[in-house]
Length: 252
Ligand code: ADP
Ligand code: MG
Image 1 (cartoon, helix red, strand yellow):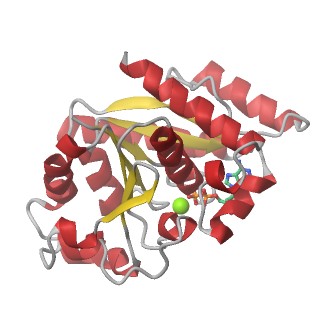
Image 2 (cartoon, helix red, strand yellow):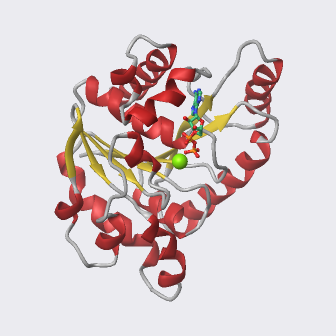
């Protein structure tokens, strides 16, 4: 059965999508069977893997128009299958406002797929709305990327409150996979301060792996490739392989 991991942070630009697709690809490279879901209306995870402007997306599955098999892209990279999102997802909040089961829609879909995979990753939009709540409800755990910058800490408290609310109301077994520091610049003292402050003020698991700022990570999406295929010897590729190793270790 797959371990289902949501990648969430209500701030944009903190490295959610970069982490989702590169962690998925690194685990695939390590012979794990992985499913990646792009749950952001912007569809960035898709374009980062060369799937642009997907006509059929998870939206059509959630709204009952298509079976999930119809939108599944198999082996998009080694051992990684992919479910696209698209701009239709942006309407979900409003459309679902009065639906009774609105928070369990994604869970119902992923539970049926879990037997086919070792890991399922959900790349969330930068908000704590219906999409992210659906993702947290469907998941075993949540991985929270944090950019090493001054305002990072404000968002973290709010994120942890949301996780607590979801535990109480929708998914009591939701755990925190870990906080992941991203875009770390060792020459920048602020980066070091942010890491120290999170360790001091928050009692949550923090990954040993820290993702450095690496221009190759920023370039790779425009080539439609994960970092291990775009530049497998870059510091970014090394970091995501190390993160994959940490996730794997946890299982044994
Ligand atoms: P989010 O999904 O949280 O909005 P992204 O993963 O899209 O964030 O990252 C925001 C931007 O920063 C993108 O342009 C991405 O390529 C770039 N980026 C992400 N992580 C790194 C990194 N470690 N080093 C350099 N650039 C990065
Ligand atoms: Mg994103």
